Image (cartoon, rainbow, N blue to C red; front, side, top):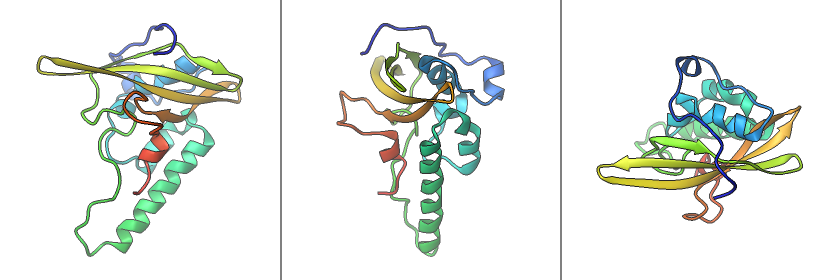
Length: 172
């Protein structure tokens, strides 16, 4: 895990539940804003246009275009296969977390900053019965216009070699 932990709330306040996350002047701030949002934390299987719009101010323009292009690909695929009972050829589960079951808690670590790029470890836990599982995903951000924007996520590097958000959100 990178650096020491900085504070981030796993519980979401009523104000956070109703407002869209806003980009922050620190990488940890933007990551905390995103993961504290119930929709971001819990969304599974698809990322429709209204969600892209909701989060676009916290995403790099390239990541926004990736989601928009993916949604166009999905619509095209569905049109091409409308008379078939096929399952979309893409990953299932939480969009922004590496664990299929999701997570119960998270904490945001200290960013490693290299110029206009930053990597922020996010430590998650998920409890099932008596077992608690912990892992770390790495949020990758870029400094754009004085605020830090999410550009990608590297999912649990100890489990996968370079598996990212952009790879997950793509038709296979």
